Image (cartoon, rainbow, N blue to C red; front, side, top):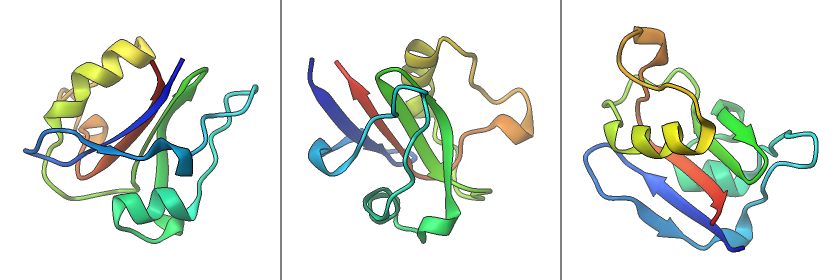
Length: 104
């Protein structure tokens, strides 16, 4: 299996990022919030939010982001997390840059 990392920016295709600078969640499913993730998302580490994590994947966003809706990442997150993501509830709308690291 290979670890891949992609940065999803609203309205743009996914941008591959070298995955070696990121870590997948540990055995308990806990993801690490690191400076490398903050740099990729263009924010301070204190603003990072773990959207979802589990065996073989983690998705990060910027906490309470007011940016554009990021619809491109929704199908991937649905497939990886087996959870519904969408625009039904304003609090659940995915906005701004989202970094997804996963095993393929």
